Image (cartoon, rainbow, N blue to C red; front, side, top):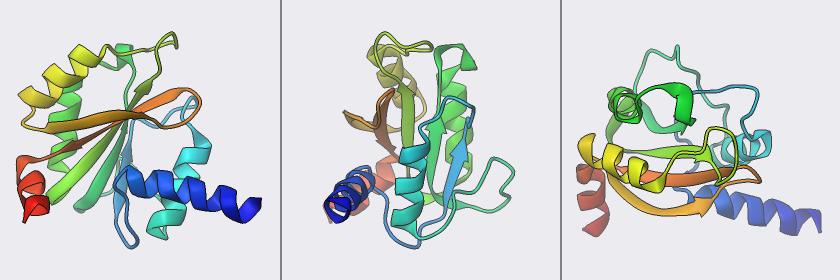
Amino acid sequence: MSATADHAETNLAVRLGFQPDQVVQEIGYDDDVDQELREVIETTIGSELVDEDYDDVADAVVLWFREDDGDLTDALVDAIAYMEEGGSILLLTPKTGRDGYVEPSEIGEAATTAGLTAAKSVSAGKDWTGSRLATPKAAATRKR
């Protein structure tokens, strides 16, 4: 059972867009984040997530965001600044009914304003929904 569970969890990280050897920066870490999801991502990329103080570019960003964390558009624009060209952001927001829930329309509007395209939202743990956001350049690269 353990191998099957590990495989299923790793597949979640891969479905969320993570690949081995990526540098992934985590923004918005707090006591309420999903530790299991963090571990699955770290297992998939083969290293620890780097924090907000990381001073180089990352291949991807994990952004934990709650309704009272400020302006989502600003947070997304700031996250883009940390990314390698063609990178993506995994935006994690609390699920419906949880403290800090963010309306899907707000996510869509903020992503568009920040110049990102949003893929379908997926369950990313017991309390979190994940939205994979890509720069237009990243979307164009995948279509080749």
